[in-house]
Image (cartoon, rainbow, N blue to C red):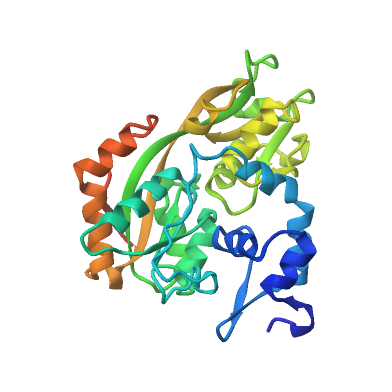
Length: 322
């Protein structure tokens, strides 16, 4: 149970961080500040506020000039911040890619007018929210090094006893963000252990971090030999920006962000599958059918295709029943 003595109201958090209360709600909505409910009230642990302050620069960087990568969640009429990301107040979708922002806009314009909330969290956290009935859908990109298969092995482990379906969203290219011209001549995973190479990492639980750690395990590489392995950023943009500023020589992320940050080259390494996990029991519910219909629509695919760097060959197809 949460210790009441260390819990804070959104206003108290705002006073500590010297921001507005609405900004606190936005941080909670995007998954950047953990929160929980006591009845209808939102509370935040003191230790989570301190952790946010410690990593504040990372969060600020991830939210600067990001209109190309991330938009605000759709807010229904009569919107109240206290209801944000409430499982019972609207459709809750976990994931960070701009593709999901496009999906939520299409849902809002849909004939049924579905209100969708976004939780900007990584793959592990998204599956946990789905398992705990705090979300309806979770977008994931988790590579299993033993089988070479994306997502299915992790869904089986993290949703024990919960039958689920996996709907394909898109395939994307993952690779290294490098300083322009690749002055360190970094070409492969094994280069990360070179003494002259500094890494900027992603946080534990996100699909990009899982890909890196699985590659290290499969190749028998010692992560302790990688300079900067413990230094984390919380978004692809944060990683690419750190490389562009010269704070690191290399980072791992998707192609779209890498090509939109000045002073960064992208070295493609691994094609990944980005997919949506939904409980099987929800398959025939109206909101699930609407999501699948939108994903399969030509209108949605044209808008995503216009962004470039996505393979939409299987978009909207139910690729697995787990």
